[in-house]
Amino acid sequence: MKWHIEKIINFNQNQLWDKGYSHFGFHDYFGKQYILDYENNWVGCYNKNHQLAWTIGPKRVKKSHCHLMVDILKPVYLSGNKKDELLISSSGNKRIYKVKPNKREVQLLIDGHALGMKDIGNCVYDHNDCIWINEITGCRIWNFNQNGEVIQSIGNGKSGFQRKTVSYHETQFNWIYDMKCGPDGNIYVLDSKNYAVRKLELKTQLVHTIIGTGIAGYEGDGSDASLATLGGNSKRQFDGPWSIALDEENNIFIGDTQNHVGRMVLKKNNIISTIAGKKEIIKGKRNPICEINPLNLNLPLICSMDYYNGRLYIPEWEGDLIILKRK
Image 1 (cartoon, helix red, strand yellow):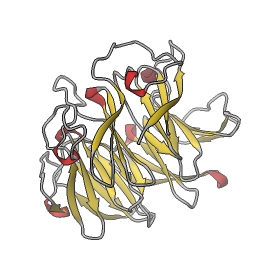
Image 2 (image 1 turned 135 degrees about the horizontal axis):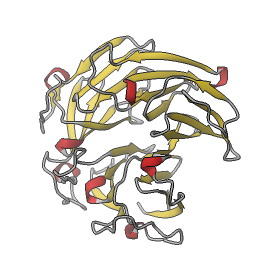
Image 3 (image 1 turned 60 degrees about the vertical axis):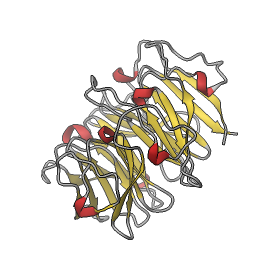
Image 4 (image 1 turned 120 degrees about the vertical axis):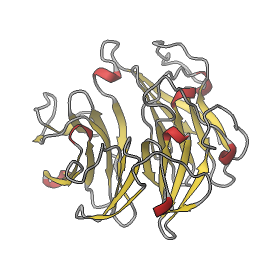
């Protein structure tokens, strides 16, 4: 499977990712696109004319057509369901908000602080509209019903790793940076400081390690992903890969941040390969918008990824958004 660069967006040189739009490219169930402005504490939805149809946050956003005043702090993730409902993860105050955009309604659905969570990362709907949340440093996965009531938590809050298949109650993680629901209905967890991807199989309540060995490195391209290694940097507080995404065929994409590459694992044979970026990078160098080869991309710090409708969105922390399209 081959990819080409459809577009490279160089955001304003004085508007770096860590000063502004740190998460641009998220899509909901219907393909609407969103900005999550981490530093300025707001989330916005773009319309077809590339204007802000509506925004949400504690302060009004000037260019927004409609703004909802809500105490969002450091938003990091967004997901939607087929009912046109959104979940927004407000990491700064450990809250999950539920938004009904058409009705302009917002509800505080889950209060992580009240539940004793150390932090909140991602928030995703599964195929039954139940909700899954990960604690990053708390090393736990939480499962809630549609009303925000706890069903169960997975992990004991202490870092650990099992390469073999284990049950929910045996499972341990080590800093979970990302999590997605696959088209097969299972939950895929980026077990970042274990340099692995784990699959939560909902029917059997088993956890399988499907990518990675628990050891950092950059090996395995062209081979079974269960034997591959993902990048690590012990000097970074947020070590390991930072993001994952899945397509309609359940192929998995990994933002292998410390190796500075995007990698893909094919569902049909579990083979891993590098599809974007290169190990040798130049920090601070922007990607030329005329670049055509994904393997020439300079990706010092891949911060998040999203897949929608044949396109993979790769934001790079220093200000580039790369959009890859399947050939």
